[in-house]
Length: 209
Image 1 (tube, one colour):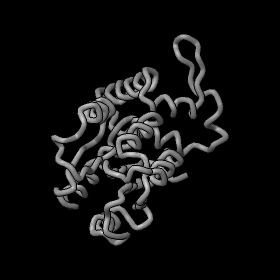
Image 2 (cartoon, helix red, strand yellow):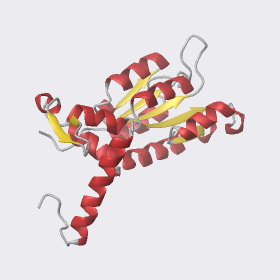
Image 3 (spheres, helix red, strand yellow):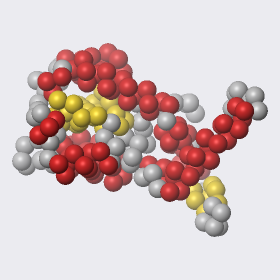
Image 4 (tube, helix red, strand yellow):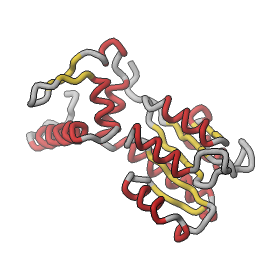
């Protein structure tokens, strides 16, 4: 069983020149050809993300799609309904100040990683992706997700923990709680952080030791 799952960089954007756009070329150089996926249609990109929540994902999402497709905001909201652990960087062709107020509130309240103007250039966007990828490696909830996903499927559906009120949860159920950042999911994260702090305070520097 491997210790880590490769991050996927998912670009959902209908305004790129081609599959060889400089943004995609640079991202492939940094994260690997197989780990950078490009979708021109918002529905196709959304389907990929929702069907691959078992792996760490950073999304670069265009806000401006044609009328017969889901908007960037709609894609963002549908991803957030399933998981709070996907980092989403939104790119807009308009000035940030011209984003609809309700849309802006939704982005803030649902933890968009960043909103950037396309005029900022691909180097700025790549820098944001690198920052998001680093945070995926260091967040407690992402580490928990990665740990659960690596278990065999036969183990994920067995009862794993019992809460103080006697409710039993399997690893798959815990994964849902963590992804949706429910009260239980956040409580599990808090307990693990407290455990690590306690171990460090007692001089135990290696969790596996």
